Image 1: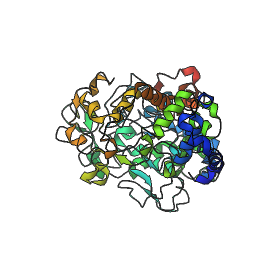
Image 2 (image 1 turned 120 degrees about the horizontal axis):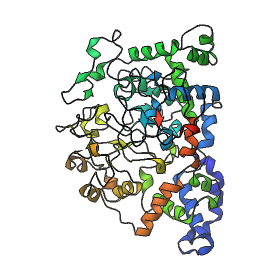
Image 3 (image 1 turned 180 degrees about the horizontal axis):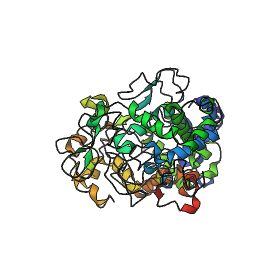
Image 4 (image 1 turned 90 degrees about the vertical axis):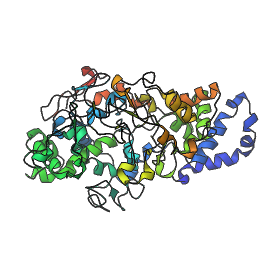
Length: 508
């Protein structure tokens, strides 16, 4: 963020030069100088606590609530998936901050439940949360969807995607694809393991797109599945929408060309989904209110933990807040942090994805995108806002307790040595295929190479800060479950959200 927005803090800090100099020995009047020291640390890190209020300015307009509500219905409607059994909401649950309800995602071929009892073949990674993604310059665990300008609101340099989209489909200065989320919303319906399924579009793509049986009872994509084109799948989804009178009416109310009898196109679908995501901005946590001058917004434990985060712990080195990080507590770069490698039992026996490595129990991360072996095991730093709402942590959900995820950063070698997927809280099918760790540790980011010792009270304060100091209470399920519609325009049944009672849902 531009430091000009923190000008008041610069003046205040200058006026408090003496107090800053004496902060280490200050007394109880200010909790041992906590407010002064934390204010100075936030200023030095470039944190303003005002990122949420910047959304309309950076969009260049207010959020269109009618378009967002259409996107909400599409989010929960299976009509966007040719397999007709999953949609965005199946993996991005409102009961978990619009993140995964599993350690490792279950997409197609699910049991119509979203929550602890969701069942079906696994994908390769945990679904990241969709809350606050409006401010992310790179999306997905390997950062494969990116704004080349470094700003998701700026398409002057275009948006970069893996083939077949590449850098040309969502090119520079497109007057419609003005935000990275609008581009990214073109992708989920084409993802085979997420919502499209392996039955394909039959006549459109051809019989070679039929399911592939690996002999173990799993349906996995053919080895050359990446070569399939995405556009036929999108057109099949559009046929569904255009043949649904209720959707034509809703799109027609927003797009004059549809009202005049023209077809719903995919940019309309993607704009609606993105607009809904623009309403999922919950970035007003205690740390934000403190930065804006409300010093009582944080407990003393949270303040002490924040000082460790920005200071001794150096967590901010990767979980950054300045510049392109947009105060999201991630540098949005890819690192090797030594996360234990877990996979569904026997690699493909219980999953929809063929894992990497000779044992089919590894995830090569960024290398899958770049083809560069130097990128093996690299994953994007996870944004930490609202981390308390997650049911699992890291790209593969290897830990299910926040305190264990934090401990892993403090001593990676010890964490890996002592790792037990059962005591880590993983479901049984993820405890039987642990991948090799020696090659991962050999590439460990130097920032994590040396263990960091924290006293028990320091660790407790750091945990309290990450858990509570970064939590926006509005993102809790009591609020977000209200977004689940009782019914959707297509007539498909709505997925059952185990932690969202039906009485909390809204009619569409």
